[in-house]
Length: 120
Image (cartoon, rainbow, N blue to C red; front, side):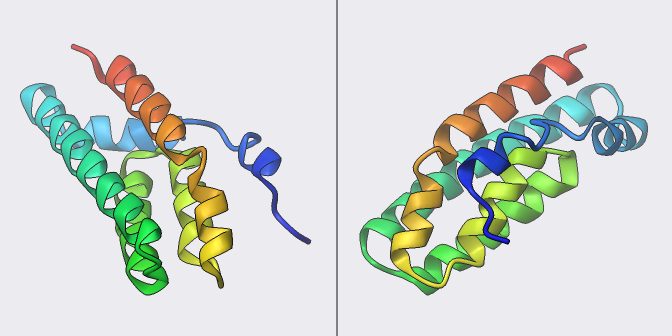
């Protein structure tokens, strides 16, 4: 079965069970610090991924997508995780670029919701 971008929208933006576990382990300033690092590194990786795709570097794009997927999964950014997984498993630049099209918006939305859900 082929997964489409519409299928990605069926994924929750945030996996609240994963986020609850993170919140149980990290409290107060540590949680806020982790969110700040996540936001900064995710945005940096996004820029690197965009450059790799533009340069036609599929292998580098897959590595960067894997990195983003891991970070997203650790905090429960489920939709970002799903999109990064699709980019990582893409067998062509065309597919990877296609999956990337909506990625920045989903990352922004996910980070916004994580910030709101972890606000002091």
